[in-house]
Image 1 (tube, rainbow, N blue to C red):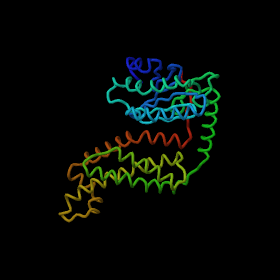
Image 2: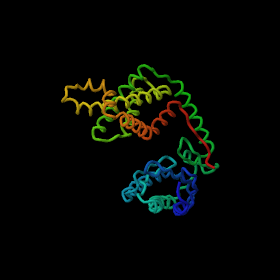
Image 3: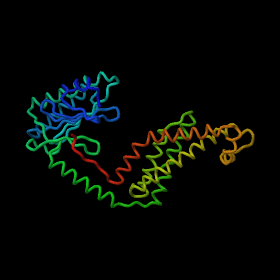
Image 4: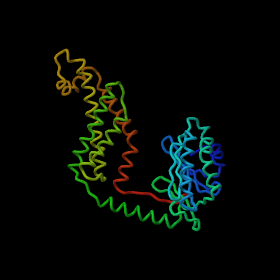
Length: 311
């Protein structure tokens, strides 16, 4: 996750690098650090002596956030603190930024005799290990890990038992895709090919499927993605037809005529390659921008989950 030189400067080099996150014990506290789209999420497992300690901690974190511009958010749970830190623009500033935000929190916890254990139940008596659950990282005792595992299994069974209405869902996906297609045309009119418009098409299609289909299951995700590609095809054709119409309207062509005869117009103007080249680029950009959303939607639609111990 970090070059070794940077890792050794972060929290005294106490956290081990596991490629996709850092985790370990720092000054007696279990800590994980994940990178999330321009941010770092630092989770600290805590065990307060009483509720009054938590109230004072929340007040401290509120003030700390005011004093640290890179600290975007600070959230407390019963046995954890989550600190969201904006990534510095320069890599060399990463250790200083993290240390400046996390160290005062750890010092506060030590001063007020907090301890560290399981981030779910607070236990300090059982063995505590770091587990990766659906991409996130948590220090847990085996009892809490087993409870979470059972909860994920139950949720998976419930999700897989739900069925959607395919026809109604596809209608909803089509209607939703129109929003993304309209955005595609608008951005194209500005002279750009934007994968973000394709991503919006995918998200709106899946949302539309969910609304009218009742539930976004596996066939709903697949159907929504197919509709996304179809919508982009016609949005691209509509965009080119609009440009052609602007050039031919003075010769008596209507927009309908241009749309129907676009293939002929492209051949006559030797623009067939450019047309399909832009369509392919659009598809590539769309896949790049929407892949994560589609994969997450597919995973959620099947209720799939992952849980494993970090070695």
